[in-house]
Length: 109
Image (cartoon, rainbow, N blue to C red; front, side):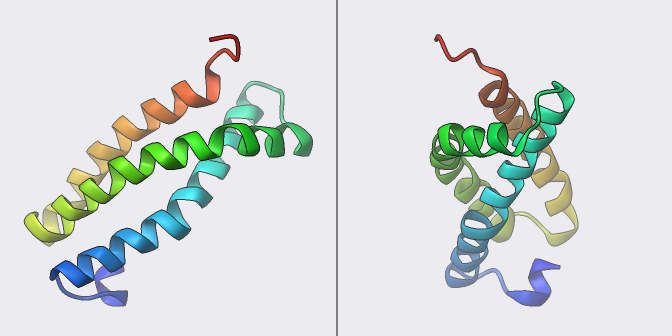
């Protein structure tokens, strides 16, 4: 779908796709992930969710700024379109492990 919005594999197109991911999709997904994690732990309240976002989103977003642009650069410029979902899903698996760690880490560390 992103190729319909931003076609091509040029450096500019790849940077646009990466920026869209970092500014819109990344923070939105991370906030939803935090809510789901709190729901699963039986600790979801709007206050807990906003606290989680305030405390952990900056760290997760900063890590994402180092991880996802590299994934985007590789996937949109070096991987054939039919293989992009497999590559990105593999990277998403790794990212989900990281988010799970962030979401569940002990605050006393």
